[in-house]
Amino acid sequence: MIREVAELKIKPGEEEAFVAAVAEAVPHFRAARGCKSMRLERVVEAPEIFRLIVIWETLENHMVDFRESDGFQAWRGLVGGFFAEPPKVDHSEVALVGFE
Amino acid sequence: MIREVAELKIKPGEEEAFVAAVAEAVPHFRAARGCKSMRLERVVEAPEIFRLIVIWETLENHMVDFRESDGFQAWRGLVGGFFAEPPKVDHSEVALVGFE
Image (tube, rainbow over all chains, first blue to last red; front, top):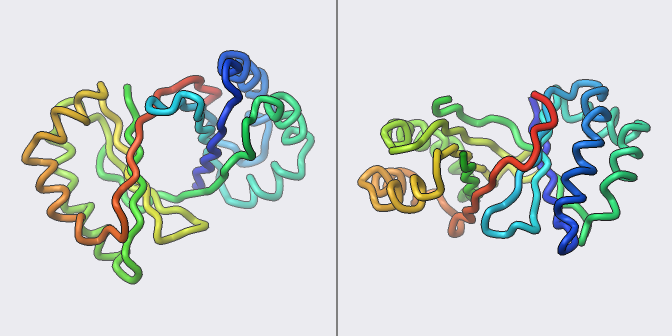
């Protein structure tokens, strides 16, 4: 499993419309190959910063299958206009589960 | 619920010992007031970067209860020597659950 974290800085005053646009984009993630879950977090100390957290089966499911799909174009079409700067995207893997 | 994300850059070559020290520190999180889960992630694109992700019932459970506890001192005693630079810590809240 691969955790995509996309840090998204949103234009001032557009946060609510951005969250609504993300909600509209959910079906594109649900339909994506290897996409297991998708969630949006908002940073307490910097409320203009959101983090899109997507769990993929493999890195390729995100970087190849999704990035080259119509779903990715639709996602960017819905939310790209809200970005105050280019998204910062990386991936992580579990190193240790302490407890859940 | 509050998600603490602590980004930890680890000294080169000490990653394995760091993960073992985090494992040793798990009981201090398990015993902490309001601590719901604790996990360590490692960044694929920058494997010297780890993210400690801790779910707390409230911000105060982390910033007051834990930070002022013996458990925090024990945690820092176990892992502080592995940090290549000071941790970057913030908190986030769920803005939208797409699907799980």
